[in-house]
Amino acid sequence: MEKETLNFIGNGSCFNTEFGNNAAYYKEEQGKRLLLIDCGESIFERVRKLKLLEKAEEISVLITHLHTDHVGSLSSLIYFCQYVKGIKPTILYPEKEKLEQLLTITENELGTFQLVDPSEYEKFPIEEIRQQHTKVVGAYGYILEGSVK
Image (cartoon, rainbow, N blue to C red; front, side, top):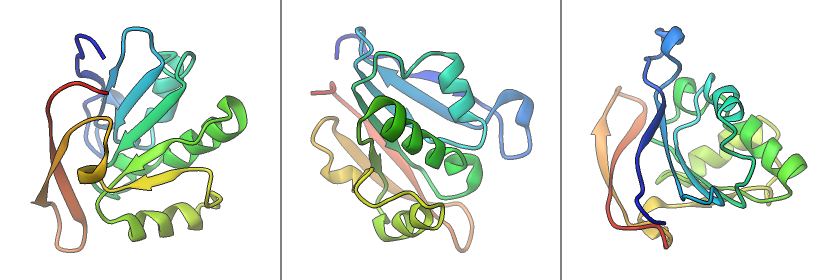
């Protein structure tokens, strides 16, 4: 990727819906690779309106935590990738077992997405930092450095 820029899709909180859920993305200039940061309830609709998926051949989603304002439309994105794009998105989250449970409950078929620990992602150097969000939710901050390979 050349000249990556972090672009925000939404900057509202869980209850500040007029600004959309917190989410951002990096997209290479040709639009073939997309790294989405979080995919809350309002984000899939905004991603479609921004036409971020049209040219995308490789889609990765970096998840900060599993509250619905951060993963609420992740299943819709996975379904879209499977049925419309014919691709398997990569979902990045350190607690892969918990996220797999969530995606299985929402009836995403195993094999239609790939779960990867962010620290093991080879296409973009990511450093994960455990955060305290609530007493029961595992939350992570990330440092993104370098260029997408």
